[in-house]
Length: 227
Image (tube, rainbow, N blue to C red; front, side, top):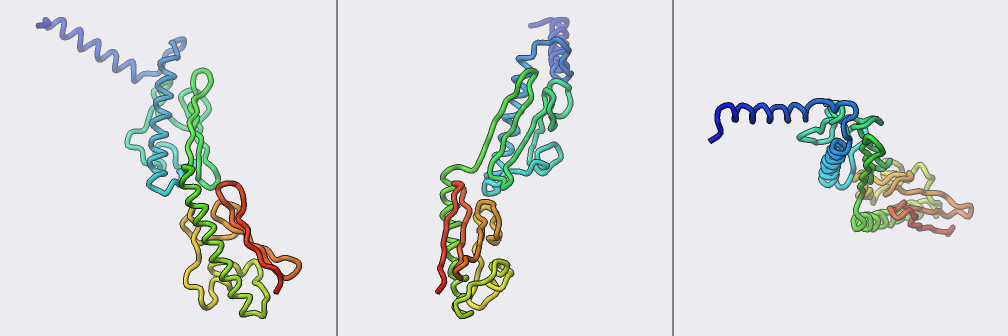
């Protein structure tokens, strides 16, 4: 059995190790182990980001949410092993940079090391993109039916651009029980440039063109010429 003196030395040694882990790294210390801690912290943040996105239909957190006290759900927020403080957005060692696409469909997370950086990324799975593109196409087909309904009720004249909206004349006409939703935002499809949005334009001959913006980067086009 260890003597009382031996036990005391072991306790002191353990306490010294814990204190060293909590204190900032001294200048000139070997950076490799500390950089590994930064990488582990980045992977921890990535886990939080991915988990929250999966529960939100693969809508990734906004940039302002990914910080301590932000909207990102993080049971244990990582620290900066170089300073002993909280890991925060920045460009110095032990900090991170989080950027997210405008439509919140993917992100890049970069941890800043003593030399260089450590980058991880994430985005909507390919199978889900295909599924949502199919839903976007179906929504555009329904919009075309509503535009055609309007044209038949107005002597073959298609609606103006501002009228093609859930709260516009086309969306409020009789026979429109529901306006299609964007599978990306789960809100009414609107005219715009994001995935799940649509474009509507009139042609010179009296027809129109509807375009849906897909995750592939291409547009799904439905059009009609003048009657």
